[in-house]
Amino acid sequence: MRLFIIGPMASGKSLLGRKLSGYLDLPYVDTDKEIELRAGAEISWIFEKEGEEGFRDRESAVLKESSELESFIISTGGGAILRNENRELMRSRGKVIYLETPIEIQLSRTLNDKTRPLIENVDKKEVFSALSKERTPIYEELSDIKVPFKDRSKDELLNTVLKLLEI
Image (cartoon, rainbow, N blue to C red):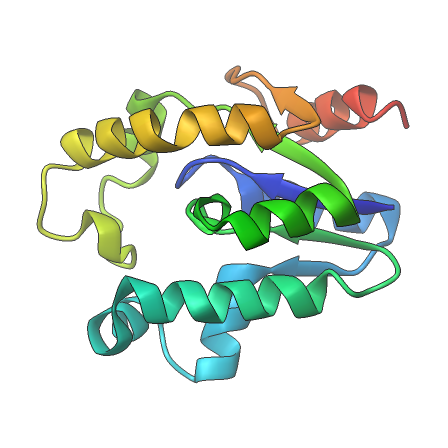
């Protein structure tokens, strides 16, 4: 099985990836964590030194390499879908799960978060709204499975996704 998890910032992609990996006993890659591991630095530092373009180059490389595994679960960064090469790779190498998440939930989950460069020292609601307008149509077009947001426990989320995957 080859699964990519996409969605906006703070949608629960990493959480779902870890849960699916444990349940299905499949290798798991969180592209953001892998980028930090390889760089020996946090994403905010990479953005500061290399800009978003440098970060996106790293992201594409990690996504490509990770998706060469025979089976996997990969949770992507919220902006991984911006590059056509990443979208084509996901389409051709696995199933894509999209986690819908309202802006209000993103705001509550990132209230005290200082680790996300796109929302540092800005009006978060304004940024989330702009990102949503730009990215939601891409998430929807790319996804094989759309998981509507619902306030649910981690296990309920896992069970919902397993049902949608027909496992």
